[in-house]
Amino acid sequence: MTVTEDADGFIELDRVEKVFDVRKKTGFLKRERRQVRAVDSISFRVARGEMVGYIGPNGAGKSTTIKMLTGILTPSGGRLRVAGIDPSRERTRLAHRIGVVFGQRTTLWWDLPLIDSYRLMHRMYRIPDARYRANLDRCVELLQLADLLDVPVRQLSLGQRMRGDIAAALLHDPEVLYLDEPTIGLDVISKARVREFLRDLNAERGTTVLLTTHDLQDIEQLCSRVMVIDHGRLMYDGPLAGLHEAGESERTLVVDLDRELPPIDAPAPARVVRVEGPRQWLAFPAAQSAAPLVARIAAEYPLVDLSVREPDIEAVIARMYEERAIT
Image (cartoon, rainbow, N blue to C red; front, side, top):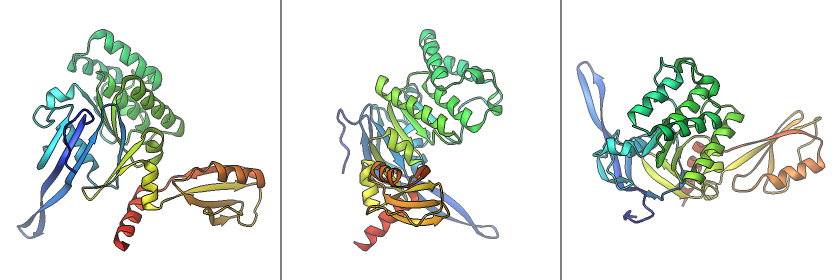
């Protein structure tokens, strides 16, 4: 479908592609030149204020797409606009309207205390003093950064640095926030805090968020829409439940009982897939709620603990491929 510019197209991609020239050594003083199509004719649009998950396996083209949306890379073909701006042609102008967090690459100054990075960004973005202080205070409180402000960035753990990077991306009140693995390296409590922070940011300020992650719980708790990219092509665009249905994916309920028992009598379509002593693993459709199954087990069995494991996105995509091949 060709993307047309309208009020709902705050981020617009129309048949966008990115091709890289790769040279590979094939012998002594010989190199072979070939083209790699990292993004292959992708079209989609994101409305102002949407939170959208953009997911896929490693090497699928997610980061390449984000880099084109920020102006770091220039598309090889197609049309791309963010807030009406061509990122590759007006990168500086766009920079004042977007925030970016790359999970494995920091935007902070490595040898400086965290607060000094924020002060430099204050000047770089020419943020009014009152707005800078208000945004900094809010981020420091909600992301619990007060004890880290005087610590050099190189001494921060990955989880601490991620929180620092998220705050840095928001100091200038961006209209669009690109997040690449924002909860990587975070413990369970910190993940919950970051998710709540992003949810509130979207609700209160209408910030448009494009989120790439391998953690489907990030998508499930933050996004009403998910897009799947693989081999540079958009494979799915819709609700997360629809993705699970398309890939027939399953979640796993891990149940710890107070003693070893025969396999749990689970209502279909749930089923026991593994038993090791008092621990049992039950698979059930990912599109279904775990609550009824949990309630039944808690009522009928001596339950000690349980946890739900999300399906692996690579497995979901592989299943989608299998279904398409069959049909």
